[in-house]
Amino acid sequence: MPLQVLFGSPAGLAGRAVKLSVPDRARFGNDWPDQPVCGDFDGDGEEDLVLHASGGRLSYLRGPFSRTGAPRAAGAPLTSPGEVPAGPAADVDGDGADDLVVRATEGTGRAALVLGGPAGPTRTGTRLPAGVDVALGRFGRGKALDAAVGGTAETSLRYDLPAPAAPATLAVPGSTLDAADFDGDGRDELVSSGSRLRVLRAGPAGLTGGTRSPSRRRGPAPRGSSRPATSTGTGGPTWSCGRTGATRRTPSPCTGDRRRTCSTTGRR
Image 1 (cartoon, helix red, strand yellow):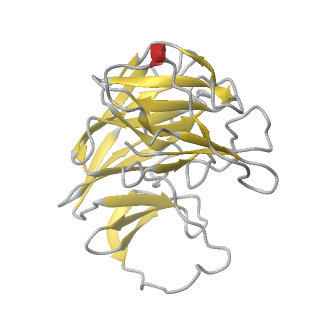
Image 2 (cartoon, rainbow, N blue to C red):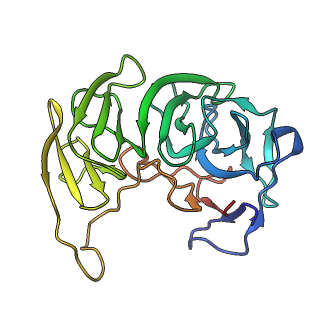
């Protein structure tokens, strides 16, 4: 199924989805364009899309997008340290352009931070260790964003991105990671799930091995709660262009109309 765009309105998502137009000049190889990640990768104030291409390349579509699903511009595929872009995007280096994590492959593998700029996401930043999932958050050592890389036996940490990235390791497995500030102290906790759900507390020295396992609830979440959305795993085919979670606090539409948002859906 091709990627489709659902446009928002003051009343939420409305109307029918339109097929996302990916120009031939922006494609590479025979793979289906998928794994969309939204972000303002060139710093012009408009939302763009990065897609999987193949052969170590990414398709880069500049926004805003028309109501027919066409990007404002699209060039040749970008060379990348991997083929699986992973969201959500975030301005890690503070230059006004969003950056993103790109994984070498789906499943267990290495990943790297790819930095945006006037030409889009073209620069490779910090290279991350091999793992199953990656989450970005402010885990406590400084004001910069940090990365947590989950594995089957431990979780690797890289503090103060994009560079230098101080390494650390927690003896906590993390096949699925998310991050959010649950207690409002300005630091993000790390949620690690798999065989067991854990919440790793953040402090001035960063994340610690101290965890708690929340009891499972039935029914709706309590009023005022929020769902963290900083994981860069590849667990599903649907992606939203709204900015949520610890690294995406301000609504950032995909169209030129600041009241509107869009989402992309599809699967390989």
